[in-house]
Length: 308
Ligand SMILES: *Cc1c(COP(=O)(O)O)cnc(C)c1O
Image (cartoon, rainbow, N blue to C red; front, top):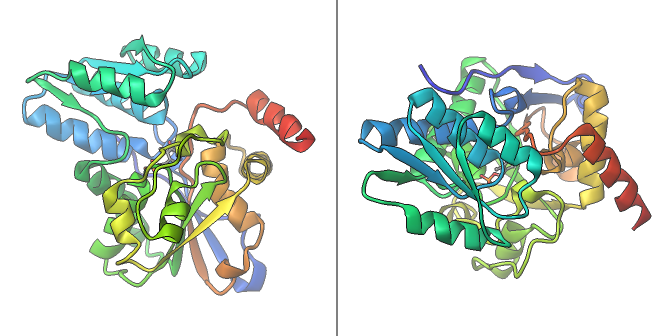
């Protein structure tokens, strides 16, 4: 038994078909709390509970906090989420619905994170949003499912925040013998900490996040994610917020599913028919999901971003 579920792998007739390309969608948006996060965080929480943790502490006001809340409830372990003031009322409500204690503290993530870390006692486990090998091993199961389905991808498109998804997908590719399958790592402009680190060939820290794709808003990617850029074949791509939101809206019509701009970023490079992706026959796109955007919010962004 795992906390996450096996998700559908769909060949998208709306997105594929050009140059004989099949676009495979790994539908992580259909996880119980709407994002891939449950794979890694569920795995980490199970492991920490097995090692005796009596409480889980998270500092994410987004999908990671929600996954921790869900995992804790399923495992019967209380969860505290310290979320920054910027966390939407909707996200707070979703975490409370999973019976997490939500403490709202600090103007930004770093202040919330500092309080969360200060609360971690001997019997607590701190649940990081992206930088923990247990998370990556859990995320990697999505690639095992692709292999079991008999689909052999020749490239993978995914979104990057702090790089936990990327580390997990690469771990999954490599444990299935797909060491040479390239990864296209997509970020939004203003949350492009990986793209800028590759450019500078050192792990840079963004002074601030200037993108609506808050789930990609890690100011610095993990060391492990940066290290993979020197080991695994990969390229980085950056899209505008406007393109990410437009992709979310198009995806609603094509696949009847609401996802965050963080996920829309990956969809955007496929919809745009980026030339770098043209040569691949079986393109695997991780539909990472996310619950913090509503239809009304996507439409409001579409309006304000078009006007700016
Ligand atoms: C967390 C998240 C990401 C980014 O994942 P990282 O592991 O931080 O790179 C992308 N999309 C969604 C919907 C997320 O919740």
